[in-house]
Image (cartoon, rainbow, N blue to C red; front, side, top):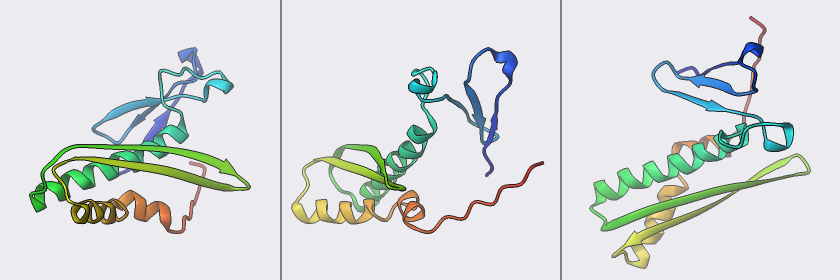
Length: 129
């Protein structure tokens, strides 16, 4: 699926509209650049992809295994220094879960599709249409 992003000066703001063809959402500049903080900035979107994928992966896995999970919370933040984008992810899973099950869930969190993608090499090919 392809993501389309659009912006027009006539909008009177810097909000970018995004769609994948079925869902729609918006993003804006960082507040320091004059963006509206009611909308995520591009780094928020990147971090949220990892948080959402981790949460959804754990949800599916816990259901499949029949684990007594009552709540999954994932937070992701980042730091940028010396050309390195470092994401900090914290996973909290609640329920009647043994240390062995929690270890299994951590293993699965580290195998979510977005984690695997972000841990690999990237190649971005850009063309002007």
